[in-house]
Figure 1: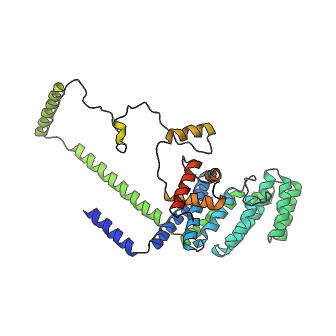
Figure 2 (figure 1 turned 90 degrees about the vertical axis):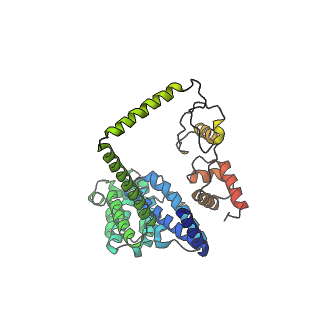
Figure 3 (figure 1 turned 30 degrees about the vertical axis):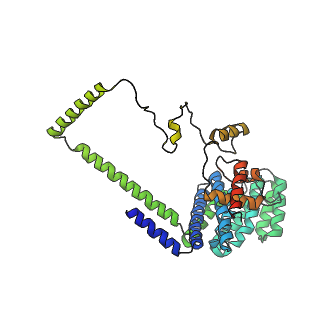
Length: 370
């Protein structure tokens, strides 16, 4: 009864409130949560988990901007663009620009310049110096001296680089010295650590983590409940049984034995448990099943992926709001019909190009294609 009353009150209050504004607030909480998640993965130096969360974050921000017609608050999108380039800073085969000569750290420099107003002045200058030095150092450490020279020329044209620092970097490139004092004092790890300091300061001042705080309270309440249950069980086990209760238990055991002896040998009902969500399975003959593991689309061969999809194609899984957002973002980015490209660009678990095509047709029929 209390639950029904509470549900009625919530629905009544929601009807009085602008639904669009409510959705906007919820999406803002989700953006804050994934921003905090990206910061956590960056500090843990977990590249795969970072990029997985980044796709969801980008889809949420695009959806929030398209609905509210405003720019991303608190520079969170800009910071995540910076983090993505820094975490890939040592991978010269990764590109964020159309020109392959632009390395991730080179691409991070202009982004860091736009964050000058939200960072401490001394910290901003230090991280800028580290980005300049490591843009050249990564190329030297990888043995790509040609790219190191091109990077130095690009820095001279596109960045305000001190003359003294420019001279030291030129000497490093000409001597192929990957272990010089400058590179040993301004390392890539120092760049990561200083970005961590910036994230801590930014999170304290600008970020709201309502979902994290709410989830933490739920987890704490569960732990307290489980500890209380365990303590009650311990107390009940320590209390000695009275003679009357011992006799009652013996009588119940004798009655149970009599009942077992009176049972007919034939099984009237199968002891096999059926899926409560699929009543038809009780009428079908069950076959021995092996556990089906979730196979990552990118790490599987096409034959393995096809077999996994065919094995699970009979079970229809409802589309989530996040999957719809990723699909809309993919169509906006790659165009309608490029389902395989969209499938590779976002994490759709066990979805196929046909699934994306059918879902997009459904969204268009409902008028949700933009």
